Image (cartoon, rainbow, N blue to C red; front, side):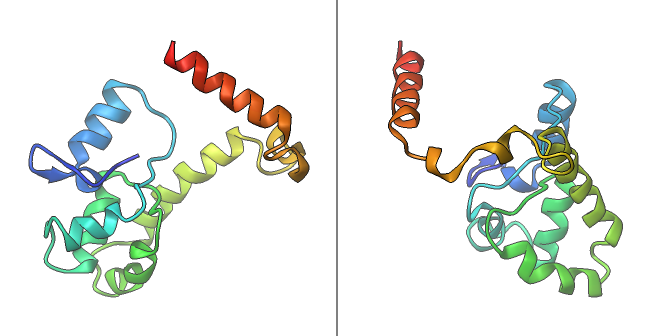
Length: 140
C-alpha cells in the first residue's frame, strides 16, 4: 500500500523507485499496489507534486500504483486520456495486476474458498475469537 507520506521527497504513490525498484524488484512483490484511502489525491492536493489532477494520474500510474482506494483516478483518468497524458495501455497494465491477483484468489470460475464463506460467518463468535487470538499471538 502506498501511503500519504513521501520518501526521498517523492509522494509514495508516485514514487517509482519505492514501488518498482524496492517493492517489485528488490522484494519480489507480485501483488497489486493499492493506495491508502486519499493518498492519491494527497499527491496533488497536499504534496503539490503535479500541476494538474491529470498529471497526478499519470504520475501514480507510471509509478506503479494499481488501485486508487477512493475516486481521484476515476474522476480524472478520462481527462488524462483525452490530454494524451496516459494511454489505454497504462490502464491495462494496472488492470493486469489486479486481475492476476483475483485469479490467484480464485475469484472467477470455479468459485474459490473466499466465495464459500457465508455472510453469517462474519463477526460470528468463532470469527471474533480467531481475530482476538491473532492479535494476541502477534503481540507476544
